[in-house]
Length: 107
Image (cartoon, rainbow, N blue to C red; front, side, top):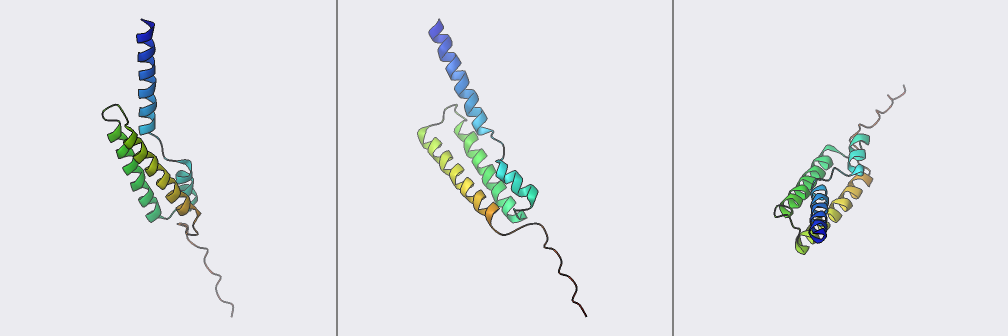
């Protein structure tokens, strides 16, 4: 009886963690980059599309209730590439905030 209970508990906790993994929120640097203006609208759209693709892959992997080794490797690779791309885009010198206007020429 206790063995069955332990097995059900482990299965339930693994399923809950997998569902949480599939529904992860946007990473903090992405949100901060949008708020601070460090990401241009084009960069924001590209990163949002990558996040949606990653979310779709995660939900497809969880459709059968089990994430295989190959699916886990693909998800890990996509997350790594997304993180690298995010770091690059937030760290570049582009900004969505307008530049300060130049002072009018003196006469």
